[in-house]
Length: 148
Image 1 (cartoon, rainbow, N blue to C red):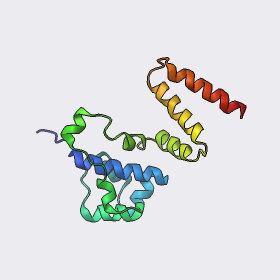
Image 2: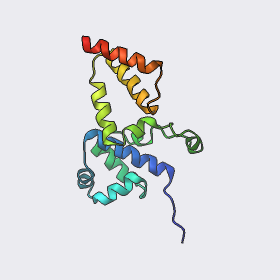
Image 3: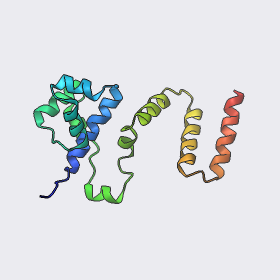
Image 4: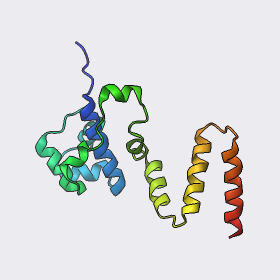
């Protein structure tokens, strides 16, 4: 017997359910309760292991306060997705609690200069600590911010 892997569209829809639930700060148990299913079933939906029926997707959309089309936004050509792992970066960043917390905090920063400095710092950290002109620029920006 062969194990069937989830359909990429089911995985995408489940990831969008999870992302929206995270953004609302809702637990899987709370969503499950609202839908009349177990939290394990919500886990299966979010992983794409169980396909979500049209009526269930409408119920999920109602609970999460989004139109059904939300779950299909940003679907990429799956052949292209394999060659471009960063094609869905936004969704990926919102699929973790840290990503959600970072995004929520970031949008509350009023200073454009501070936001740009943070973006440059994160880029620098993501480059495995490679030193560059950008790092010297960031150091200068943060020194300037501390003196304000």
